[in-house]
Length: 452
Image (cartoon, rainbow, N blue to C red):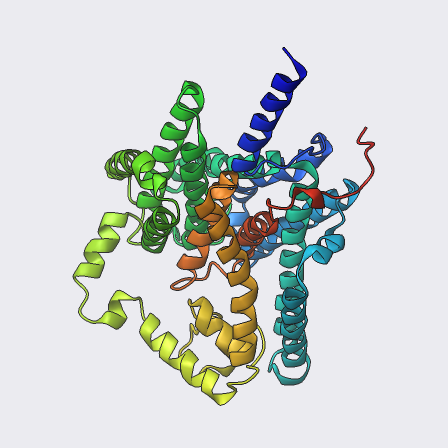
């Protein structure tokens, strides 16, 4: 082959790689770098074992503590791995625009002000601020690892989230064997590995979003991979229908519509896959035993259809949102501080929720109008930039995490995906992986080339 032909071949390869959003000359991924990704994959199963096998299910307030600390530990492992891999977390912030950094500083200042000077419960506001910082650092760590190691990180994270809930599923069988005949068992709040069935649904939703993106990117010649994705996706749809995740289902469908608008080819390639896996998954879910009224998506929809008022259909959310809006009007500029709703609510009820099940109203209550605009800019800039790049077709490898982030954020309009630690970290990782601009591969971290 002549030198000119060789050069043309290399140029063609570079063009193809660029069209897929592949980072040029990434570092080889070290085994140690994949440790947090494997933890992400097995964590729900490990917590299922701990909850069922070691009796944490019956330990009352210990359940959320174990859950929270386990996911925070994962976040610190990911952050530490990024630093140890010569992918500095704080260094990643230098790649952001000045406008983005200025808005972030303003948002952080509002959060600090409300926590110290305004919040009725400084303790709760401080804890929420601390977990938010951990989530931000986790997202930056994911972005830093992507910048250094390339799109292999994207695929590994996507597969980890997809496989995580499949590995956790057997612990439902264990739990049903031990408690299936116990009519007094609290199936809503004693799920294997999660404090509640609603929180379990968030992880199934993330796994399904990852599966849709992975199937779209899969090669028709990769029969084993595609078969695995089909079987796994059907299983996850079955679990979602069985666990009664109405909000997750609607969020996933809405996300698919959004992605179809951004990437029209998504419709032509995915519509048969979507219809088939949803139909089979829904059918299989009808064969599973329904342990309580909160389970079974068809039962939930039937209950919704037979409900009289819009407030009842929304599980009292209209009342909740009306109350949150009136609270926002009390301090409309900078808000009341994070995690303060239960301390400022005007609703007189013993079970007053700690969050309002709507990310926009939650932000207005916590940060006021100024902070909410800042937060919308911070999140919106990442999402819109990623959507534009997807529309151009120059970084399709981000599609799985784009689906994950979009679905969980859309779901946050009617539920607490923005509040619970595991879904917050999954959103942070997804947005962190979308933060990296594939159009500027020369920004790859200038860390040591010695990865031995």
